[in-house]
Length: 205
Image (cartoon, rainbow, N blue to C red):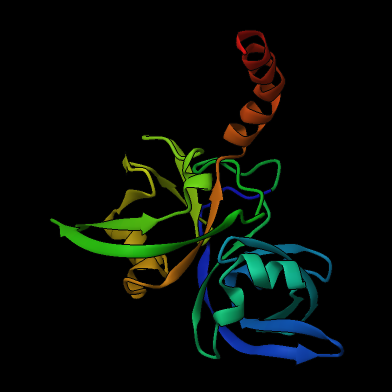
């Protein structure tokens, strides 16, 4: 479990086939302070297990499902990535509940400066847009952000000056893919309500 409060920006050291699988090595500092093999670290919002670590890097394995559902497979050496360690029971929940289980990817449509803030608009599959609500939450590349406006296939957020310094999002460009995890509460509500909705529809048929 994570909070969506990015702790640092790491740097991709290596990404590619290794020992019959696909592995990612990231250079970092803060998230390695107490990291051990087997610990979880979110990389661009994707919960990954540390397989090995050195003084200044950690390596994780990427399953085919992870490569197909996220933007990690498109990373190149030197690319910046958002990093967050798994939350502790004593962690302040300044963001929202983030599992690190990416639901899909969106595409950045545009940026728009607004004083010292920055608007970012993201295009998203309508199948996932049903979980996006104004003033609700979405994790974008692992960063917990408040949704401002929504359309049929897009939503936007604003990045305050502090967030612009601490996240990789302002370094991206329109057309870049970003990992999206919708609010877990929305998915559970839909799941729990589905039988009642199906029953009501059957009665009205």
